[in-house]
Length: 113
Image (cartoon, rainbow, N blue to C red; front, top):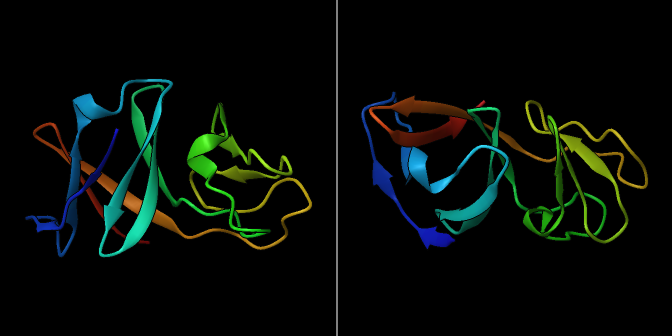
């Protein structure tokens, strides 16, 4: 599921991007926030968010594989920490942007970390 949402919410400037039920545990989805594709991943009930673009060659990370707290790029198999955006496996060396996630009353809000 992909959707475009730009609804300002009550979390200190956070933006409502999805409902928690839209991202089931062990699944990933994408949303578009102010023109940027963002990957949402539910890791054991905790939603994480990264820019949906590998820092190596801009592959869509949402087409990759969820592996615990990491996402593996579908093109060259770089992996990234879903908490921090840090590149964990080459060929990527630069991090991807990570977003702070807040869930309030079943709604998922993002803000910059």
